[in-house]
Image (cartoon, rainbow, N blue to C red):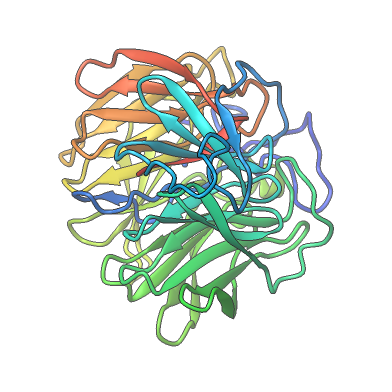
Length: 405
């Protein structure tokens, strides 16, 4: 059984290290929105986060300038619409999002703002991207940035890296009328900012926990859930009154404080009953009832530090294992595919990854290689859900959040 631990090798004033990690055996450590992949509806995928690292394969493809269509589009003609099934990933190592053909790799990119984390895509084809500068609005059909909405929260100077201020987790209300973005304030508690999608303005700001890695929305839109990584909690916010309520989620305890690896990262909303699922360390799945605040624990089998998560309409849970915190005790990087009855398949991955999205038919998972600690690489691993076979696509610059268009 894992015990509370601290990341003693990398102290961090204010925000604290281990923030992008959870906790693990002796030292060990996932969207992201209520990521329900239903039909042709938008697939949401969020955010992420753990520390600056080394890059891998460079992404390929032309660059689309912000506010313009592809440079390959002749003046005066409409751009070729983005094909269904194209992936969209946030380039945390740059200031762009990259469009990716799932068979061949990068198609091109659009400038959105410094160090983008999470993103969510609406049924209208517009992507909302949480960057260090504000929330960018991207028309995914024409591949152009439409707006950059600044935050109301003061997050300090615009910076890059694991602990940069600005947007992290992000989600969209079921009716498409509101965007909810978790804003990190270095050294302090974060906020949940509410954006009106019609006016593209921030209308409200709600206090939440520290470093809101993930934001999710109840299926009926009545509540919003902000996962506070450094505060071991989920803040439940009523959509009508915006009244916040804190639920501690700490199956290993909180004694490690800011330096602990045993923290929540990403949550999903279970379609069958609205409960929140938060994976920890490939050992424990916290099942949280947001109405009562009660948490039950179910066993997991991957035995690895876990980050990104998503869930399909039938209740299949996908969880990204980033790799061992203690190589002598923990397993390597993996993707867990967990059936609604709790049966798990664990597929090994080559190197750390961060977040995951799933194809409309549920047969293919796309796992981003832009891990927020050392070991990240510039691409996406494509996983056959049935067989576990994998292949790598070079794409983007340290890609974190991902969605299927």
